[in-house]
Length: 294
Image (cartoon, rainbow, N blue to C red; front, side, top):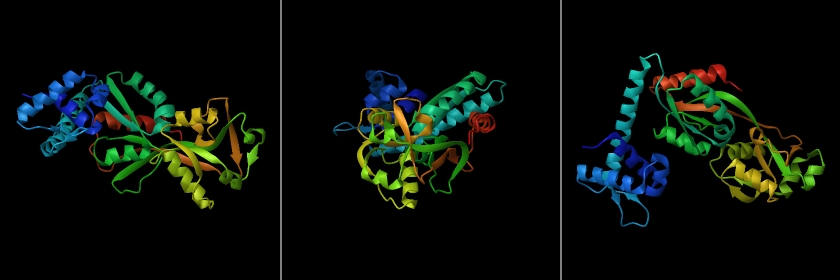
């Protein structure tokens, strides 16, 4: 017989394309993960991964099992939440995807308050860029996310929860730190640190700059997180545009750019008309009622 944990482990290995990376998610040793996969292969009497390749590759039968396994896990979780919803205490799992800024600077406080109110709910949060979060929701690997960018897709529903401003920062010893503001044309003469493709901050910045006639910023280095950007600025690698939510460090100086005000919003995102379990419904109501920061 097979069990739910084996299916969860299998799906994690498929999604991470690595037994080692799966260890960090499922909190099992590599030998335990290998044993669980082997048990599934014996049960289905077929290889699920091609181990001859340099990187882990899912076999065709493995792809079939993955689709069914995700549905089985989802149904089990929904059945658990449905039963728990009839009880007075809210119990179950809440998995949230979040882009970097809300995941790092906004959601921790919100989740802390939610956890105190609903102590029986186990909360997990995945942090990646907005594009990845939205794609995971479309692919049904996430049910809810908090992102800083809207994708024009009529399958998605967005709820505005917070406001943000993207600002220019430099280290205290930068030439711009001695003046209160710069002109828009000045930024075209400098090389900037930038977030990776898929970042909501990057997409918003580029969109606004295009309306000002600047099609592309000179970029010296692309970095994968706001914290890395901040450390790069402090190290003198270049100025950067980052979220105002992330500025708490006095070693960074905020510079005003004339005629440039970059405002955006953060949104809860989920699939329209999707069947939401009681925990998701409760969380959405909670964040709309008590934590609307827009």
